[in-house]
Length: 110
Length: 470
Image 1 (cartoon, rainbow over the protein chains, first blue to last red):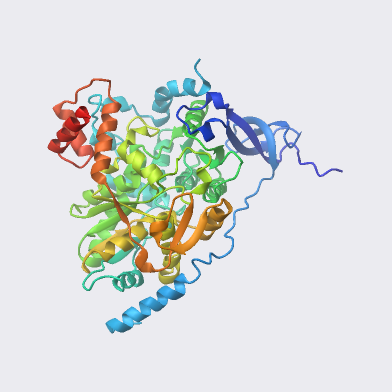
Image 2: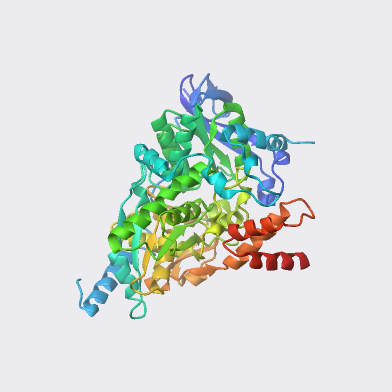
């Protein structure tokens, strides 16, 4: 057994492909973009078997066939909130105090 | 030799005509002018029809809330007698969490009516979720093309989240690296699939936003006895401003000032692989706001329905740090935890309300949903990872792509006026540049340019003379 990532037929996977070589790209791009290829990632069901990096055709959720190199099997989402932002943690406390002080000075509700 | 890119782009007109089910050439009047109002109404749906379509779609009639705590906070820092009342239209209450549902509901309705099998949109914003959600309800297939990653395959978290939600609604999401060729691939996909182009900039989409202006005028009348004195709009491609302003006009709120607001991202190049992940806002910023206002017809349709210079009275900019501060304040003071990009107009409104009398009424016309990736904490943590500085201080020291300065106090939030007269001039220069060389504008063209820039023929003539001399 190896830990190699492999897709079996029917797995939900992602493939990577190069859409445009640098020479085929739009004109007037900044140099740092112009020198890179335009890359694409699409998810779908594997129509065969492949190891990561190997060629694989998938059927997307709309039924399109897309060929590319296998980049992930059962790809997830790893976006988070992360840690609280120290520059913001005081905002709620300070503004509630400011509001209360203003309303007290106006003789209104607190 | 023609590249693959050139080959598709050469056929773009023909592909888009089929994908939109509409021939824009019938609206053209000259190399400069076209019949904007005829284009906007050619779909044949009245405003009442659009309201009815949206009701069935689960879109619109969102809550209009008065923000009494925020208003008093503004009053705590302004001159006596000043400090306008602030209201917000909680557009996050739409089905997929943003005002973009109004656009998508009409585009998908049209796609279904015309018998298309699916819809395609090129968008890294909330519009993708909106189209995907409406497509799901209408039994249409849906492909969303996104600019998601830099060349190292690092995804902007806000866009990654939008990709996730599109997939949650059953859409196919095509994710690309940085570059304007997003539109090239969208055209290629339209050609291959024969799906409907649910463009952000078609008259279908922009007409869908008119109901937002209409609701604001009517609900403010019911609440305060009059339409609002000011409406502040988060401004990116210009559709939000255009549709809202048209809706206000149609409700008879002709005295209401329409103010666009964007996050200042000056100095960052929108097609730069290096700058892509050094910005925290993927929409509502000057990187889209200025180029699209000064040349709307750079869009993916032959003539853009979003023409904000026709409607705006002022254009305000705010910094990223100021918007993050207000996003935090909105949650803590008003119980509204919403996405930062949608709070751009809120930030500008806080500054605007400070300079207006107490009897003025300022409506912020949208909010958007938030969550992991979109949340202001996610955005700031990501900025730090990308090497952008985050610190407390005076927002004047904010430098897009280098340092995000979070205000130390509420008082430090001050929007800046962007020169609208300069934008109008720039638009006229672009209109001339896109006409055949040596073309001399006619009296009708001058009338069109005046209407398209909320200006007058004499000002347009003076600008044309100035440009000819330069």
